[in-house]
Amino acid sequence: MADGEVPLSTGPSQEDLRTTAPSTVNPHSLRDFRMQLSKGEDSIDLATWAGSVPAASGIAPRVRVGRSRWFNLLWLLPIGFVLLRLRRLQPRSRILRLPARHLTAEDPMNEDKKQA
Image (cartoon, rainbow, N blue to C red; front, side):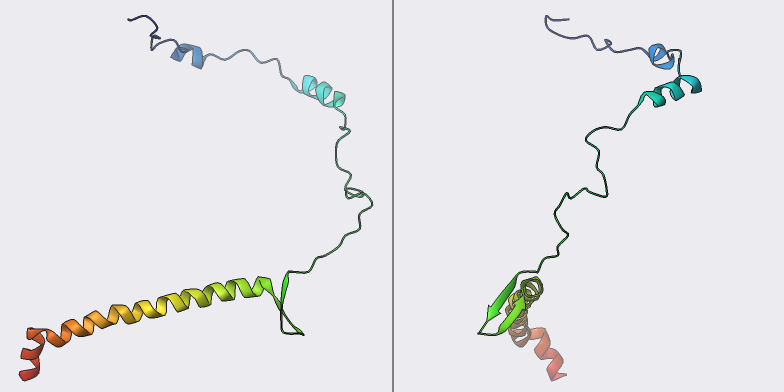
């Protein structure tokens, strides 16, 4: 073994893992321990957890179009995303169809089928 190498068998053996320390836990000691516990000072009192701040509800962000039309932004974002995706897919479908028409128009096998 070279200097600085750690031997592979430095961990606990299988016999060490199988043996367990004797337990001193019994129901009487658990009861004594639980009686010594107290409620912490930093616990939350559910009745006054917010202090003197009253409960309030908010309004979703809105966008004004024109002078009197307001639209909820939480509705406009997903609708706009879907419209953009549809707009992006529309030209792709046309582009994918154009070469196929060009190939089928000049295909000699296709002309043989037309003549028969």
